[in-house]
Length: 273
Image (cartoon, rainbow, N blue to C red; front, side):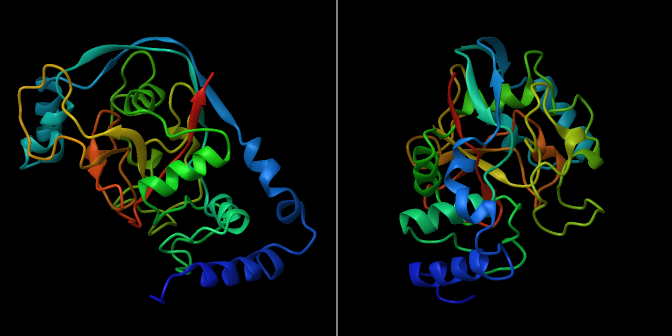
């Protein structure tokens, strides 16, 4: 990979907006900030839902996927009721072109993989950014990162589905490892409409893990200690193009250091309704 810096990112943007990518004077080049502020969001109503999972559910995962690491899933326990206020959440993950508009306008550093053709399609989810960068983008458009509970409710709906679409790991509904489709890496956002959540939120299983606002801490009543708990790692959700369907379940809790800039982590924004 090339050396990554702001000047290189701006040069790339010049080619993107003024070259073959987006012609000069096009609506995208002229109106991108307004478009970002008007990005479609989905309303999730106030109310209770069941967050987390049970030991019985974990045993199902172990049997279904032949997992040898039952302990990996124990941080999802116990299932517990959470009462949330209503909120709005982006229908789609933040795209590469949306984030690069932020880079251009605010003169911040580009994402780690901005010059990698595997990940820089305009409608692919942006990857290669850390937690602080994701948070800064959300603030720029007048939003914030979703909390872990908000993310899970938006994915599962009020009835606590295993996957956004239901109870079975239907491979064709998400972009994940081993999926025999046109995408070896990330897919354009919204390209799996049959995988949408009960509220109509897209790509909450597979494609990219998504940053949430929360530190990785145990749920109340969790009896399985971990040295990783605390204010060291941030929770990521949803699984990715590089993970299997067991990790695409809506209750799975991934975790990453805030400064990690991986090609399998992206984000979406939320705000109070």
